[in-house]
Length: 68
Figure 1: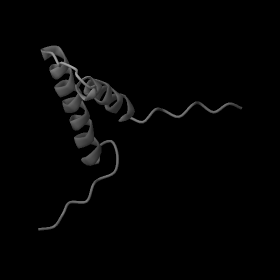
Figure 2 (figure 1 turned 45 degrees about the vertical axis):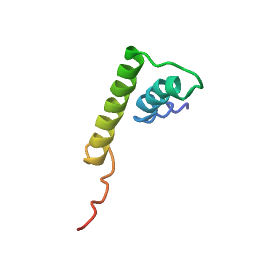
Figure 3 (figure 1 turned 180 degrees about the vertical axis):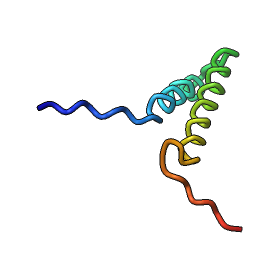
Figure 4 (figure 1 turned 90 degrees about the vertical axis):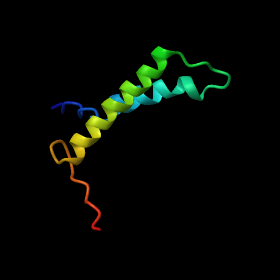
């Protein structure tokens, strides 16, 4: 009996998108255009929203809050 493959990590795709977007500014002697900057910001925001969802307990574990 074959088991179905595990589902990919929910953070994997947005994280890869963000890393790919950042590559354009980490390359030596590269010029960044407006569309590349918008892609970086969009990828960052999508990853941030997903992390907020994960941390809220909806999609994963809840991060402990620091007591002040």
